Length: 237
Image (cartoon, rainbow, N blue to C red; front, side, top):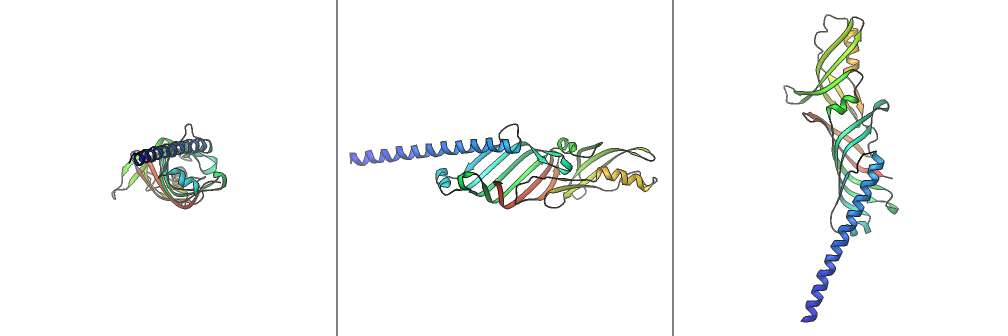
């Protein structure tokens, strides 16, 4: 009986040591992944990396992580024409992450995430002279963006403020489109053309991981929320 008690104690102790070793290993892996992502994405601080599932060491042995959650602030996404678009806050959930030889590559079976772009950050990627802000909701309850602009035209400087809708433009871009621009009916058509050249514009989120595409875009008082999903998403190679 005494021998059985000793055996049980040893089993408990060994189990505790295994759990401790597993948690130490996952913490180290999360830290290393965060540092690597910081360098790759050009962040000012490491992103949050949460490798889920237990035991972690078993996942490493088969080189496939069940689930990984990523959060980051201040991500610089390459934009149109060499511009950058700062993503204020980003979060993603990755599922079935295959690790390559030497852990040098990672491909997720599926992934979904959201990115929030503040109006201040979006305005920095807008054409010169354009201001951006929250425009409340339309009659059908959809969020709108308030766009202001001052443009030099053949009839003088024109300043206008309109509300614009926002939509997806392909798999990696978002587009602003204003409705009727007020007080232009009596002016030459070229004036409206010049105004629209500034306020109707498209911005691409280039540099997205291979396999990811944008699925929706909405706006609220906090900013522009962009959702994305993907299959066989290449995270590193």
